[in-house]
Length: 420
Image (cartoon, rainbow, N blue to C red; front, top):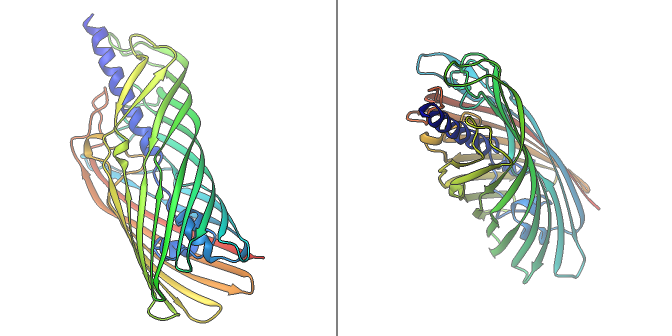
């Protein structure tokens, strides 16, 4: 009887770590949706003067004439690293990512409404750690793909003031894995895979205070995705008296997973027609990620219970973004940017799949315009000073993610726009 109670306690801890994996696999946010904005450190909410405004601030599409289309790709190399308390070092295996975007806008002449459509990925990323890190029963691998279709309508109420609203239709697919009970060899595995859809909205406001000062704000609603799929688990080696060996089990499962609201406020100062300086502050309410319930069609007694609460306890965080653009002439522009991003995950529920920590991003870019064609290219470097994690919740086998995490990333982004 004592053994059964112990196994039930063990299984709760296993699934609690699985829940941390789900949240960490969402990455989380991918704020880089346009090369011009990325070159400016994402300080774009009070500028919003190309079709990617559908994402950054849909009120900005009233500044565009006729039909506009803009396509882009964000190429990201990300390399978090981990140093264990005994001095061993590891790096994540999965480091290259490519995220596409597509935006379209239409502003009829002599009409106060403008229309836009965006297809992009506001969340995502994936990570895979080696099997011998010392935390494989906490997490090993996780992937989330998240796609949004975002139609929007903007109203130019006056020559200085525009507002907008959009609908976000979202699809998410999650695949996460971890060791189940055996800490030293990959002879067991837990896997959750599910997908789902949800809907939300975004709002935007753009106000021209005077010719040199613009104010912008945007809001993205919270949403909840019903992930519908299955769990799979097996154990190839028995732990006598504690964990039996068993072949792969497959059980249908679901989980309601919340995504946060975000709000951005920005001011753009344009001392001359050749300069645009902007500062934005962006708030993300990660505290919605509190407790998630994984519901399975059946239990696998005594090891796997049917329903388990997953305690996440994330905290709200801020992005602080500064950007500057200098227009050299009618064809060329150059931009610089900086972002400071606060971490949002406490030590107690830390997961290495994203290695959340305070981050700094530096960016530079150039733009070229010829007739109706506009091309922007940006480079972004990111790093996170060492974060020492202590007191993280242990897995059933006693493993934890205590140790030191660091973060380095390089990204190149290309966007091409055409007006017709």
